[in-house]
Image (cartoon, rainbow, N blue to C red; front, side):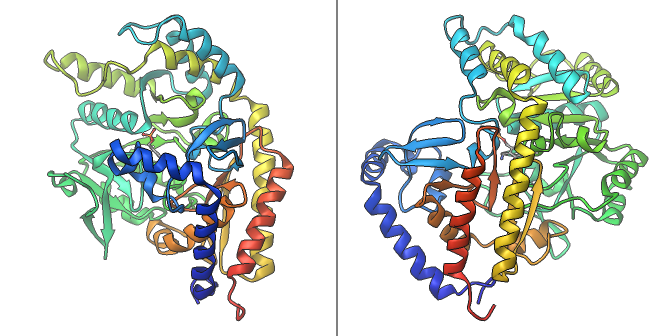
Length: 454
Ligand code: PMP
């Protein structure tokens, strides 16, 4: 027995599901074979090999909450590009803005008229007065760390055990037996990351206080809710106390809202009254186009501008020529003005509540030792009887093999959920019937796997 399921049944089920996937997807299989000729690992990005399928599923087209694969099957998409497409694939206002901009230039190393407007929209929405852009949330986080180290003159950062902030090298330090250890899976990393990265468990105020006490930490980089190791919610009062501790030690707070933008139109910080010094928003901000933005308080913006003024002329290490291009600024403007509305969020919250309640119902009816957590439009089921308190507990609840059985079972029934943990996202185009279909298939899968003794 493993997480309440019968592992023999799971192995038989996944073998059958793999065979069914192969039989049903001849065109995807042929396309994968063709791609293997010239693409490293046979895919445009190496981790696309790590889904539950025997070979990659090829997408033909996507719209709203649905996509179609190369073999003509239709899917309900509860992955939504792991948040990039949180407002549905190709939202109409963004598609229109992008089409209009397509004939008017993409990138010129100069600001477009949309830039000031997008800055104003971001400021009003997130309550941060000063903004810059990036091409990805990874880049935005990297740039923020650079600015903040320069502005504070402090070299260290603090992160929470089990965090993920994109491909920001600094954060790949784990707690092992209470000691910081550089993640062994990182490729080609020659720097000792533990020299400048401090790591503590989420929800542990005493550890945070002790780690900041030396006064050498520039900032805490955190998701307000951990979302990349399964989900870990802050305990009641955690952020209020944590912010007091940071202020006491002069450490700034950077909130990475790449995923927690699911919490509301102004992100988790706005919805819950947090007061970060810097904020990162990523994937869905341009309706799915590759872009990100980061905002500073007036006070921090002043310190950052001073640091730049006082530095010798030359490369800052912050930038890239494609950043803040005209194309993605047009997409961000349309998305902020017309797509990320209060009404869209209200609809997503209602749908996600339906989904989370339904998942809890299935789990309870089968007596499985699993739990469900919802953060706005985002729902996660985890292989633990109660929601984990920190990254270590959440990491212990992950089971990649079991995830793959469930994900492939759902995929073969036209339902896509996020790989590498168990996240389901809804968008404004998701329908109540879509959720009913997901729940029925989840129930079927859980029944097929359940250990009779549970
Ligand atoms: N921050 C968080 C919290 C993320 O989850 C991710 C990616 N899932 C990133 C940053 C990186 O985003 P991007 O892929 O845009 O670099």
